[in-house]
Amino acid sequence: SLGRELERVAGTRPDWGFELCVWLLHPGVVLDDLVKKVRCVVLASGTLAPLEQTERELGVEFSRRMATKALQARHVVCTKRQVLVRAVGAAACVGRPPLSLEAKSANLKKDDFKFALGEAVVRLAGSAPGGVLVFLPSYNALHQLARAWRDARLNQRYGGGQTQGTVWDRLVKAKGAVIVEPRGDGGATTHDEAIASYKRAIATKGGALLLCVYRGKCSEGISYNDDACRLVVCVGIPYSPAFDHLVARKKAYNDAKIRGGAALGCGRGGQAPADTKVMTGQTWYTMQAFRALNQALGRCVRHLNDYGALVLLDARFVDEPAHRRHVAAWIRDAIESASLGECARELRAHFGPSGAPAFVRRDYRERMGLKPLPLSQKDVKPNVDAKPDVKPDVKPDVKPDVKPDVKPDVK
Image 1 (cartoon, rainbow, N blue to C red):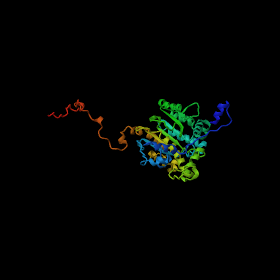
Image 2 (image 1 turned 180 degrees about the vertical axis):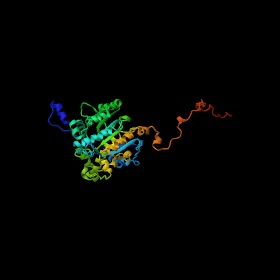
Image 3 (image 1 turned 135 degrees about the horizontal axis):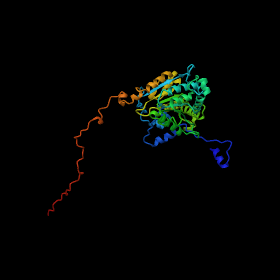
Image 4 (image 1 turned 120 degrees about the vertical axis):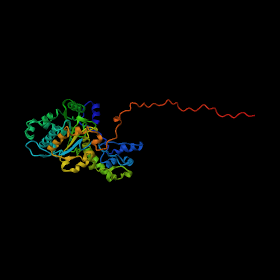
């Protein structure tokens, strides 16, 4: 930035500075040129829905080259027995009435909401073995909750006078260790160190809880296999701040593309053609939130024989089922509403000896309701008398040494 350059030249820190930022509002700028130069492009991801609008978002040329409709494959796990999916919309501390858990920004700042949410996390985490991931909408919400749950005075006032200690103490007692994802701003702990501490606690203590944020380093690109993640608790829907300048610009850009005309300042004669297939600014805004949610939900159940549970901790998934249509297709139909007490009991049964652990020990085709394969080669007894196949010692074809026909020299 100019500020840092002035500091380098003058040797002093200036009172002000500015940065020049270039924001890519349309990925087609990059992809359209690439698609024209290559024979085939394969784009694979678990968070591309809605597919038609995503195709258009990636550029007109990319959309035109789509030979067939995009493939949406089913998951390899059984969503009835291998993964438990529940939506919980209310919780209450001891001696207090139930509170609707609509985890919006304003509610997350209220102390009574923080402790109702803490009670829900304690009961859910205590009902699952191994590692538990709890995703929150922002770093501010994460650190405010952590401070409140540690505060003995606030716990006494809003936590129903729990004799077991603070919410934080109860989480540590239930899981052995509680790790908080760092902001990544050069603090005392890095992301890698936090994740390493979390996994080390699971290996040594048999469990741990990681408080993290959507779109953070702990939510994308890391595979929490087996005991590293048996339960994912997703708090709220991670909408980006609507007042953020970049978010507002992107929404306005998409709306302008649909209208066409001079608003974009490009195209023939400064009049950009209308593209009605592009998703609206509001649709894009909603899809970004649910892509982050689906990324978090995907941290659990990482392979064919893995198992776990997913809990959507927000009243909107209970009271407004329309929100479920944006959840990943592989778990959408498996979502069931439950009270906090019912969900805790179902979790204990799901992870019990006759639940998911026993289910994954069965043959894959049997548990997926498929026909068994024919007797495999490993089950066939070998014929010990049979001689091994040996290639005959055959020389390669060689043309015979035949002399060419020569006519006699007749005089």
